[in-house]
Image (tube, rainbow, N blue to C red; front, side):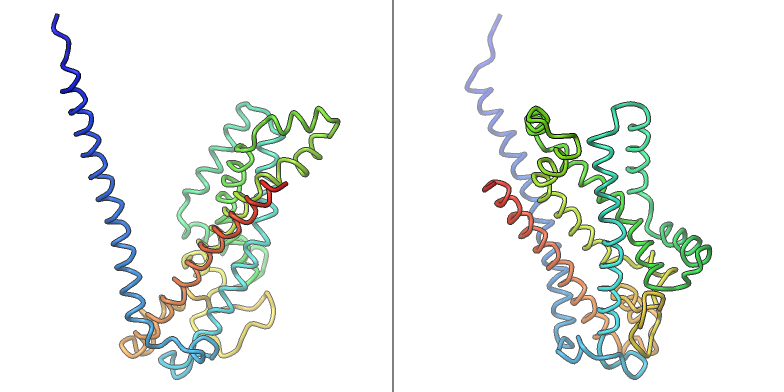
Length: 294
């Protein structure tokens, strides 16, 4: 029986490895090139209208002039409200699922339902929010209705990321804490959560990035085409950056004249999302270093 030539096998292995690297490298660089192209296009088109007045003034003359301050403020209200709704509920649900609920059929069903909820199109959340918060509970088109709807939208993401963060904590920490006499809750609160917190906070901030760019859920629950004044309470309507961009690009009073403002709005929105992602990385590193030092 003839044994295969080892040199030939080694050359074949290296050739396949080189081909795999070339394919993966091409895909990776292509993705980076696409991202840079999109960013460059938005920056070139939108940078001309960016100014202090653009960021801090009200829209004027049928939204063809002036600024986008109401939209920035409305997006800030919605992001803050949705995080206040979703963050505590999501973390508590994940703790319950990972630390207290035993493995079994019920846990599998809840996990599957959570995963399915994460895949539901955002427009469906918008319709649900309109039926429940706007009509049934009587909030009307308001910041609170939009915040609850967006909170529901990101709730599955926060649950899943928190659950994965808790799973990544080695069981020896739990066993050592319980062995020293701590209760299950004391172990979770004082040992597991601090270690998992860097990954939890990353998931939360990435959720903020998603909320910042959502249009469909706020379309039915809070977003206003134009408001002559800023919202005075959580029961008022608000303008928001993604919907304002949609209006400027598709149904403004003079689309061609407001086109530069649309690109400027897109640039502001992209900068906010990029800044959010950078903040997520910085916070993750900060809390990771803090856990290592402790």
